Length: 144
Image (cartoon, rainbow, N blue to C red; front, side, top):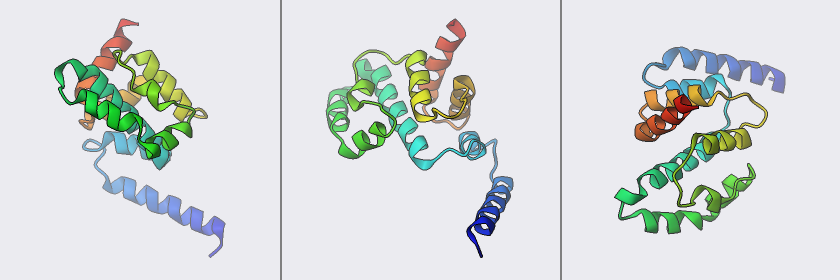
């Protein structure tokens, strides 16, 4: 089987798998499949969301400082984010996250695709990924 046939077969297999995935239960994963996100792209967004979540809750979380210190020096995280020209220290600043900052990071990670931040966040929220953070960011979108 040549490379072209293998690619066609893989695309068909993905199409079949999408029929088996309940998109009501996994809307973000379906969104990622539909938009052909790469694993490193999704991993980078999840790391940013994790940092945003802790920034949002730092006043209520006694472990924030140790979390921040542990993660800002993580070499694998630095390497992952450097791929998208994002500085690790930038995502671990002490100010509250903003929708404009999130949109900036989406543009860095998905620079060759038009990503609708609202749709992206709604799919995360529907899959219960950082729901409180998603609400916070969505409220900022509605305020624009």
